[in-house]
Image (cartoon, rainbow, N blue to C red):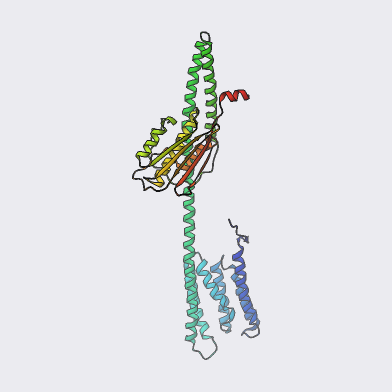
Length: 406
């Protein structure tokens, strides 16, 4: 990222260029002090023209009016065209390019046309006045047209920049809305998980109360279930509060998710339903291969739901972007401390005929879900084409281990 240096509230490069232009006009004025008609008074007029050009970008109409008044003084004095009159052309170009209204540039062009005729009558030499007028008029008209062309391009670029800024703001707003919606969905699902855990704890606690005298062993087992379920519920509650309280910077969304949900919103899918999920995507036109390494342990319901959603969104993205007929390899690797999900497609499909079933907002939704469980997500193009998504989710330690450490 390049930071442009500023001076007097303007870019340093623009100020330096304007100073150079004004210095050039002043040099013409001083260089002709001996030979030019008018002597020092004419030089003073030229220096004044050069000084006004320092403000040609910020006050183009005022600069053009001041230069025109100084040029009129020159004509009335009868000095004829001089070298520093290049300031008239610079002021004309500036008002056409930088003025807020093109009307100012048209008026300046009319005034310059009158000045061309007046200057042509004062040109010394054998040439007729109309020949000088044609020459001066051609140069002045060319400068005016160049200024108009540059003005048109400048306004076009400004409109493109404004449109790009507007689109960027809209994309950020859509991304924030997608993140908010996904967070609400995650919170609702985690709420269901916590409510289920509390129901299990209540049932088991009632069992302890009725069996503690008759069957102490069964009561102890029920009490252990209550404790384990309570730990899981407390952890899920902590994650639920984190989802609702912690802000995050949304990433630009690839687009609104208009797919059909594969299951009702009130039902919580589980990992045992992964084969059915893969079959649905195969029926939609994907060639899905699945490999599992390691043995999956018992997972908290919220983590199990997150893993299911990650697989679902990965395959949905393949169907959306790679298209029907694409091949995707799904790899689930279980280790003692984490589970890694990899989904890589070849990108050789064709556009889908109907929208893909989806449960969230693509990469934005996956990143939110993975972040709830302190996981990591990596997504990008594959080396051989297509797209590759890798998610790593840490697994909770066993309750017995936690008790021994405590």
